Figure 1 (cartoon, helix red, strand yellow):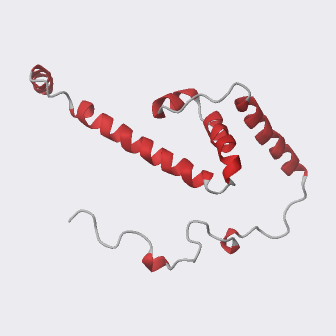
Figure 2: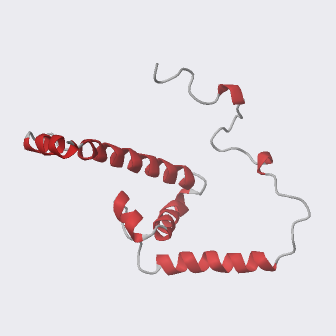
Length: 129
């Protein structure tokens, strides 16, 4: 029975729900990914951001890069990025264990430079009623 509805929808040019919603979800996913990359880039000085962006693209696998429409990194960027991370891991492995944990709560919060109160975060009113 479901096949007959799908066939009728195709004949009328309506398409499936996935065909109608898919492009919208893809656009929203791309916007979310772009915003996430922009937040990450904001942690670095402006002069470094193009290089960091290339490193981010280099860490994404090809199917994910293609899905989001991101460009392939320059040929040397991918091996240098991955090699750099592996080298950093090897160096860190040789360091003595920390005596006390590093508390990130003491760091300056770049998203909220003046601080925040938990009760003021998030939506002020429900979106759906």
